[in-house]
Length: 204
Image (cartoon, rainbow, N blue to C red; front, side, top):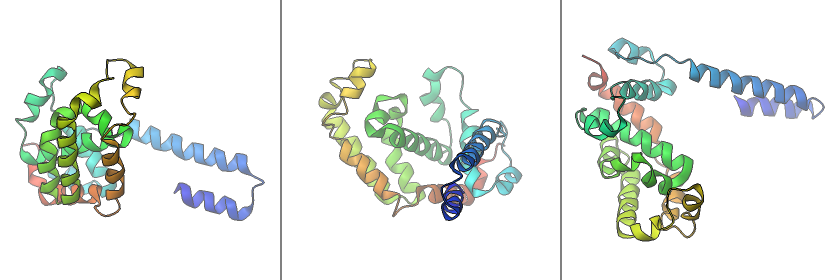
């Protein structure tokens, strides 16, 4: 959508940059507002899954999963273990993508989402993302074997965490992760998995 708008204004010339920026800002504001006010289902039915378009389905599933956790975050891991394999799969892949896309594997392991790291390769294999699974297995090995080097500056401060990115052996894994999106459509694989295993995501 944004690319189309930019192309349109480019053809008309650069005399109306303020109008272009105004329309783009309006579109962004609308998208943020739609996201903020999206419906969150505490109880998910087959009908809801069927009527939800693919570009919204993963968010709907994740929101529903989050509703199943207690407010006490220390019980998150033990609660996740009570979920079916299908639910676990979508949840742990979601956090992998969220963290790595935001701050790389270094951030992923540093945050609480890293507690699911050993579950992720199997989850990725389950949806057919073999290359991603192999990469995460490699990253897990690097983090385990070079943990002292990776975490030595992570003292709980922003400065220490920022410093931990310098010469971090996980950096190469970040580069491969982003490149893999070109060959393994991770979002599409998750949608296909959810559609094929719909019954697993329906609240009984």
